Picture (tube, helix red, strand yellow):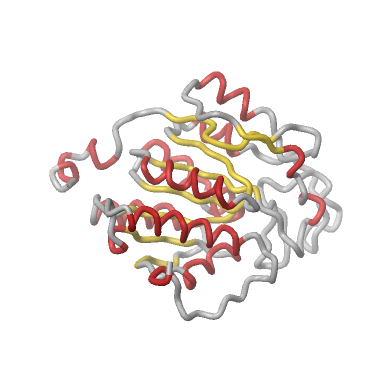
Length: 267
């Protein structure tokens, strides 16, 4: 993992789950590189704007630090330029589900062979805790002093409706499980979406500590089962169950396979 580290000072809050996500990414890539199947230069990253995006500074990989909401289309552009790259995109629930929602939806349609790792703490934590599309009703912040009136969106259901080929969910406090899911996501041929349920230590504290609701599932390839799993957690209460693991996986042609100009360049 030494070659994946940088000299940049880590400015995440002490104890922030982002530290564990970073460690999980490093362990995943180290295993893939040491297996001989991949080189470090095979991987590239894009990050959005938010606390999560500082991971760009802490990973010794080529990539682009993007505009807010634009990490996904930038990654797709990188795949168009070099279809053999293993691109990882890091985004938050604000970046992907608010500013970047149109890119999130269409990424499933294009099905580029890349991986989206989405940090969901149900708040815009870098900019002092404004509510995001997954914030629960009643959440009070500086920008919503009367509390959030609207029900949160369910991105898992949206991904299913958008013809996703890989949907998974993990817990930011479970490094071995994150490594397992990251590895499977990178191996998947197509657009892999992983939502990480993550606490913020400073903002939207009421959304934290959902571990008792979480349980692990077997890899699922049945669409109807996936829809039932997606309905178990509505992002609005602490009474529902939260399934962790591969919620849905299917095989469809990738963007690189559909475009003859790109297919001829695939190794």
